[in-house]
Structures are given as C-alpha cells and as structure tokens.
Image 1 (spheres, rainbow, N blue to C red):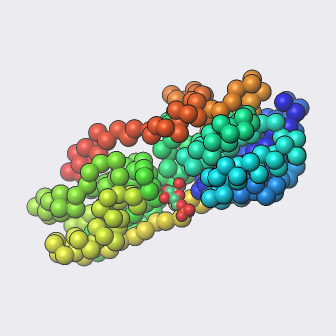
Image 2 (cartoon, rainbow, N blue to C red):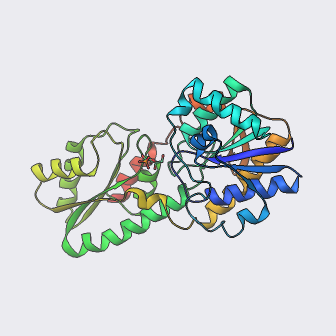
Image 3 (cartoon, protein in one colour):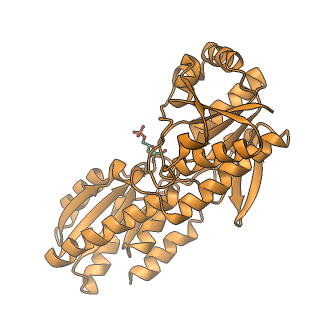
Length: 323
Ligand code: F6P
C-alpha cells in the first residue's frame, strides 16, 4: 500500500487529533503517503483532500476537535454519493482508508466497502463510548471528566441553597456518560436510555432522601432517556414534589470540547497506529478497538449490527451509594 486516506466523521471528540497524528506518523514510518480527507464523507464526495506530512500533525496532540473537520453526511447514505466519493478516491490514488468516528462513521465505512471494495479500517471516535467490539472510544474519558467537573461545581450551589439539580449529559442512545459521571459525582439518581425509567420512582427516592434529612440532591439524566431529558424531569418533579427548590442544567456541547486527557491521547495514539498496521497487514472492513487494554479487531458487519451492552447493575450501585 503506497497511499492511504484518513478522515474524521460524525461528532467531534477530544483525542481525534492525537489519532490523526498517530495515523500520519505511523504511515510515514512505513513509507506510506497520507492524504487528509476534510469534513468526513462530505469532503470525500467533494474531493476536499490535502496531503499530510509529518509537520502537518505537529503540535496537535493536545488539541480538542479535529484538524480535518467533520460532518454528518446525508449524501453518503446514497449509492450515488458513495460512487462519487469512490471516483474522487481513485483519482487521488488512495488505496486504503482510516475512518475515525462513531456508529454513523462505521455504517458509512461498511457500506462503502460493500459497494466499492476499498480497504477500510474504522477507529472508535465518539464521546458516547457505545461502540461494539471495544471497551473504549476516543473522547469518552475527556467528556466524562468534563461532566464530573461540572457536577462538582453544581453541587456547591445545590448544597449551599438546599436545591435539587437535574443535570442533563450527552448520549442520545447511550447512557455511559450519565452512568459513570453519576457514580463519580455522587448523584442520587441516574436515568439512562438503556433502562426503563419512571419519574414517579425518582420522586419516591427523593421522598426517602427527605426522610433521611437530605438537604440537596443531584439527578443525572442522559439526553436520550425516555423521561424526555432534564427539562421534562424538572417539570414533572416540580408538579409533584415541592420539598426542594429545583433547577436544571444541560451540559450540551461543552462535553465535546476541551483538551484531551492523558488517557484519551494515549489510547487514540495506539488506535491510530494499529489502524495503519491493520491496513498494512492486508486487513479490511474491520474496526480496531480495545478489549481488556489490548488491541482488538471486530468486523464492521458485526460492529454495525450490534450495540455495546451496558452493565445496568451499576445503576443499583448508584442507589446503594446514594444512601
Ligand atoms: O455522538 C456524539 C454526540 O455528542 C451525542 O452524544 C449527541 O447526542 C450527538 O452527538 C449530538 O450531535 P450534534 O452535535 O450533531 O447535535
């Protein structure tokens, strides 16, 4: 393989730059040229390419976002869009691809391989940590730490004013951020899409807390939870339970930005390097990931069909520790 392309797609995640750097530097080490495909699948269709050398990835390991930019592409969902992208890839002499992103990126890479048979390796890059075939996704650790820091700050006000705060974190279909920042932030209740949640049960728990003289509480809710998110939960609690003065906070895209943690930089570097090595070994249509801290390969057919199961027993731990 003489020339490969690398792109980031879907939601940006802290650590994507560290991964791009690892892809470029590992490829150069093996005498492979690298083309940066800008704006994900959109840029692939438009032929928005740039040649990458060792200097084009200097001083980016510590930066959030993605220097290659990203997008969510509707055009790439069509056969015609993918054909156009393939034509651009061929013209540029690109022989293999590294796709960094979440489930939409994986689905695009898999469809592209099936239609055009271009070798592709996917790398898990999403703050959601919800991809099959890996214990870890790039950006999750940073996002989690951002959320925990925010909860710690919110707790100061909750405690000072005897308030109840409902904190909404990201995760349309996955509750990993909610569950783990809830445990780390000492939340009284965590609501996630993976579990049937019911605000009446939450109110029941708040009642119990009141009996134990709790003066403040924090509830963490994932944006995709069936309760409808922080505003809906706050409204329902306000109607039925007036013991607390209730406020809500939606953390939103704050969780996607910022300086990547050490863990995200190291893991992203290892994954980026492993993706190039996989291409070099003639592997294709698979995702690299980590299982028990070791590089793991999962076929994209499997990774796109399955969801990573959450250990919902940890929700019980939240309840036990809430006291
Ligand atoms: O997939 C990452 C993620 O941040 C989700 O947690 C969130 O639901 C979604 O992206 C938001 O996407 P957008 O930035 O396109 O609104």
